[in-house]
Amino acid sequence: MLAKWKLREVILMVVLAIVCGGLYRVWDVINALVPTTAYALQAAMTGFWMIAGVLVPYIIRRPVAALIAELVAAAVELLLGGQFGLGTMESGLIQGIGSEIAFLIFAYRVFNLSSCMLSGTLASLAYLFQWYFQYGGKALDTGTMLLSIIISLVSGAILGGWLPKLMGDALKRTGAVRNYAIAKDGRAMPQ
Image (cartoon, rainbow, N blue to C red; front, side, top):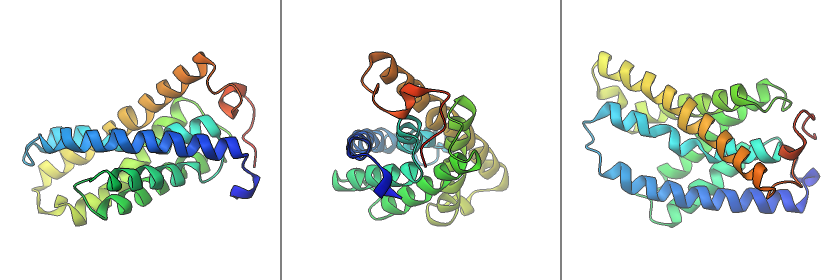
């Protein structure tokens, strides 16, 4: 699949994923300041870690861009000392798959607010399985767990879907991505 990618697409994907990985590491530090018992606030912060999986495919519009971007961002976060250890890579894989599924549902042809928000939501939904089994979600009482799940999904839609779309649109307005698929809105994504 990557054989059909242009070199500039691979370079931009890696650059954006590295930037997102750095942002994720900063978000790790902010997240660590929130008490672990502040479940609603912890859940509200979840979507931020989904940005790479929406931003990169929104600009490049290639299959597997979401998955690769999340994996690269997770690797950068880990290399910068992320406190979640190898769980960071698991998260990148899980979130990347969730994000990728949304664009696959639209056959990689629809890149709008709805597809981006669905991508962020599905990435968050995928992460919730890891949260439940690995990060203690199953230990919560039913009400707190359901509230955390709902807030995480909304966070995925907003911070993980809407925010990266805004970022991509802002980059488009600057002309910085004029040689990429985002600049040709309305055109089907190359296969």
